[in-house]
Amino acid sequence: MSEYVAEHVQDGPGVRTRNGVLRGGLKDGVAAFLGVPYARAPVGALRFRAPEPAQDWEGVRAATAFGPTAPKRPYAPPLDALLPDPEVGGEDCLNLNVWAPWPAAGPGEDGPGAYGPRGGGRAVMVWIHGGSLVHGSSAVPVYDGTAFARDGVVLVSVNYRLGIEGFGVFPDAPANLGLRDQIAALTWVRENIAAFGGDPERVTVFGESAGAISIAALMASPLAKGLFRRAVLQSGAPSARSLDVARRTTEAIAARLKVPATAEAFAGVDPERLLAAQTAVTAKGNPVLSGHAFHIVVDGDVLPDHPGDLLADGASADVELLMGTNTDEYRLWFVPGGHIDRVGSLAQRLLLRKGRIPPRVAKVYREGRPQEKPGEVLGAIAADKLLRVPLNMFADARLHTGGAAATYLYEFGWPSPVLGLRACHALELGFVFDTLGLPETRALTGPDAPQDLATAMHAAWVAFARTGDPGWRRWDRARPVMTFGPGLPSLAEAPREAERRAWEG
Image (cartoon, rainbow, N blue to C red; front, side, top):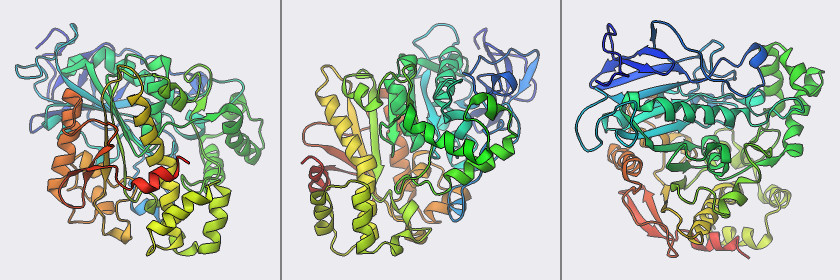
């Protein structure tokens, strides 16, 4: 062991970080260090303020249980039965978890994991969870990092501030606090991960939905430059709002609370009362049907401009990129609550007009999907507008950036039998993490999801983290997309091209 790895920790694996010694748990050759603080608790004078480095501690700190989750409420029915979202009480919510092969140091392809010198050690993956910036945490069982560590990767999962605490827009506080938390966590990884056997020069950041949107913003942010080498965007595209637009949600919550829309006023509101007002204001928000929601914002600091524009202009061109979507993303929002059956032809046309969808685009989708209900066609259009089309445009833009690193695209298409959700939003998560056996994963997949598909998808993510190549042809003008199901993984060129091209006119 290196001098930075604690040698005398009783009853578990030990690691010395820059803040002090940690004791984790060990099972089947995988060490887990849970609830590790990467920044100070955002309470008191630090509430609605940028994260500050974690404080040092004396002695050995137990890291055997998940740390507190950010203030949030569970998903509303019926999504609460499909998307587990555990809550862990406490104020110290800026924490992370590390799963690592153990012992941390040792010979092999990935080299020893010493803390000090850089350039050795295993590939590192940092997971940023989704949840519309109001739900989720690193304690969700589906995100267990054991399989990644089993396969030689050091896996880190991160908590960050959510909702009004993380993405409120105030005149007297920094914006994008949740993004600043993520940058603080990546800085912690940079400074400490070698002690766990990881290579700080081979960090892959990956996330889904709001986590992927966050990563696109991190790729565009000058404050995150150099903190990761590779990135994976799962069902999330570059997105941000102006301060003026994003402030509307903060103002709506302030009106409900009958307080000024300032951080000073909000800091004096009881956290539970604040959560109740936030939930009431955003309850009808929907990634497809819109409504009050929280957004990453162009603040002139974390984000000098819209991330889509910055990335198209070459930001993070040196970062290797894997990204993709699920075939039936919209069904998670349209099916469980019955929206898909309530949208008739007239409602479809009104909603398309409200969403400023060109008639020529709607015509292509209707003609290509003659057997589908109006709600299904509407959902497919909305999901492509939000996800598939922007990611294709992003991939194309990187082709035109001189010396850009490789880009790879995938599509997840295995259809879940649960409620007719098919290949809906978030379904791929249990496959990526290889956690199909967990009851929390089965809530969305059902009991008979194909393990061979999970093995293949998980292996592709591991390969990408290790080498920058997930195992198929990089993006080119022929538009190659690796499709994971139904059936065995296979490479397709330009899937559903007529629908994609309709957006170009």
